[in-house]
Image (tube, rainbow, N blue to C red; front, side, top):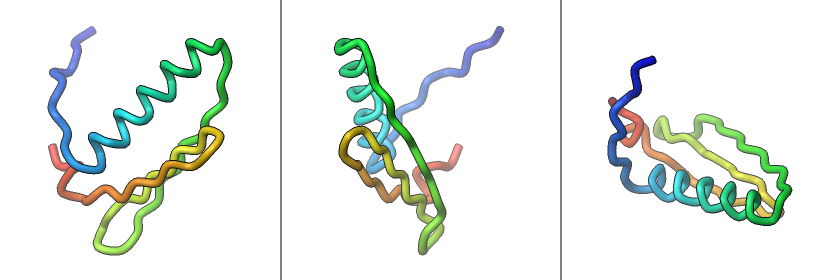
Length: 68
């Protein structure tokens, strides 16, 4: 199966991915976790990403950050 070459992300998207990684690793260390992730489009074609993990982490990601 081919693997996609990783690319660098920036801005809010980078921060959100780092937060998700940290939360998953922390949950694995504790042995249990339950998280939810939701996304919706908000003004100026931005995406509002909300990670709920005990407390909520909210990120507004510009459409330009999602371009290939």
